[in-house]
Amino acid sequence: MNDQIIVRFIAIGLILFFNTMVQAQSPLFVPDTISGSTIDLQFRNGFTSFYEGISTPTLGYNQDVLGPSIILKKGQNITLNVRNETQDQTTLHWHGLHVSPENDGGPHSIIESQNSWNPNFTVLDEEGTYWYHPHLHEHTEEQVTLGAAGVIIVRDDELSQMQLPKTYGIDDIPVIIQTKSFDESKRIQYDTALDDVVLCNATIGAYFDTPAQVVRFRLLNGSTNRIYNLGISNNIVFSVIANDGGYLSIPVDTDRLIIAPGERFEILLNLTNMQGEEISIMGYNSELPNGYYGAPNPSVMPMGGIPDYEFNSLNGEDFNILDLHIKEPTESGLHSIPNSLIEQTGYNESESSEFRELRFSPLQMGPSNMVNGPFGINNEVFDINEINQNVKLGNVEIWQLTNMTAIAHPFHIHDVQFYILSINGSSPPIHLKGRKDVVLVPPMGGSVRFITKFEDHSNTSVPYMYHCHMLSHEDDGMMGQFLVLPNTLNSNEVSTSDTRIYPNPTTNSVIINGVNNASISIYDQNGNLIKVILDVKNDDEIYLPQMPQGTYHFKVRDNGKKEIIRIIKI
Ligand code: C2O
Ligand code: CU
Ligand code: CU
Picture 1 (cartoon, helix red, strand yellow):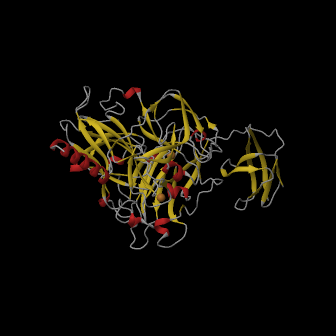
Picture 2: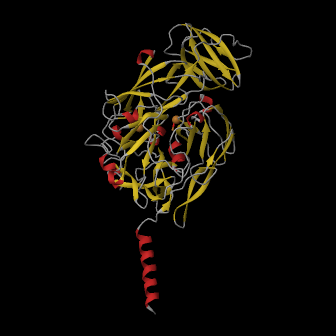
Picture 3: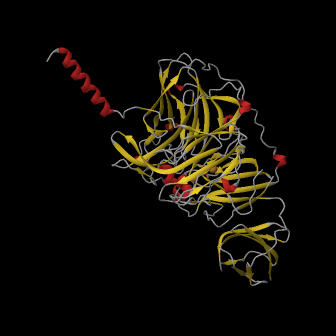
């Protein structure tokens, strides 16, 4: 053997050695984009090779895992054809988009196996980063964790002169941050606290070749439960330009950014003159306050942890999320960060006409329940047939969230973007001042107040959801639903069919006869909605225990038929 060959042998040996030592670095997967006035999405089973030579069953849209980034234009009318090619039921929700409840893809809009769903809506949203994911009650964690999620980017032609990076996949990059748990055969597990593998866009050990200029990352925490305390290695400062529902008024410089499940932040990194360097987006979770999932301790109480939590090597540690290899800049690359963005004014508290309080608490008492749940909102667990709040269309409302548990919960509401008024009694940090649809409510009596306006969409039978975006909590029932009701009830919807509600008058209950699968809204004499009952079948009995004596109007909707029947309670 001559020397050259020996050197080669040693070199190959070293390469093999390092390859088995370190998780091979993989280029960040950047999903394709999809746009236009009709968008087809196929929800399907797939196989993904997270680990070399091993294929793992996953779920995706039009691809094996995750889905294409949907590019929408503000003002555009769009139809989506969502086809369910799996064996299971699903739904598909446009998280953060302001659409009517029947187009929102919540738990009521089930798509059966081999069936399609065709929502249609006008894009009313601000330029920003949103996302889509299934919302099937009790199965959201399972389907999202197996890979079902994708990014939505709303663009606004009127903002095209803004000096921001916008070349998708080059200097404008979506990053879905998730942690997953794999068993010995590298299958994804859900319903576990052993989510110790970090993925960006379904890539383990991801790196991205970024140009040496200003780059925009659209960060989405698509994790089941985990919160991240983001930072850049070497403590490089970055600028937050947008959160859930659009731009902030000004870029906010920071070196740390907490992102909870469901939240999005767009950040700018100025990498000018850094060609050749390597830096990383990190999770500095050793600094995360206790009581946040992912912190050294998930509970703020000395007792009561999460089973297996201490065996997860990410908890309370610092770890790499995405490595950045800085390469040569592009020709049209930007090299400075703008001074101002889009003025966000919010709503005036004096405009509000309604105040609601939602309280999070464990449904049973005990140190373990304070951290593990199951949790309720106002002591109620989610019931798909029970409407928890009725909101009048056009209302400006203040909602107060109070967390009586030992763990922080990221609260999310459908339909609207809100403005945070206070967190634990003080004004929110500036990077949380824009339009939001998720807010992390601190533990142990922590509180958040926000203000929002319910406009454009109303429906007397299909509700919107609000819930904790830790998917295990949501599936366990930490969710409620609200109707946005039109201001005036249309009284010329008169009975024409043979629906019968009897006895009438009644004392305590009525039987509904002549319906298939109806929804019934009960209004009092003054037109106030008292109760909504969904999925009413023929000959179902409805109990009216809490209703005082008097006249009520039962608005029955069944298969496109609407009628109002007057019932007297004696
Ligand atoms: Cu991201 Cu109700 O969901
Ligand atoms: Cu949502
Ligand atoms: Cu929660």
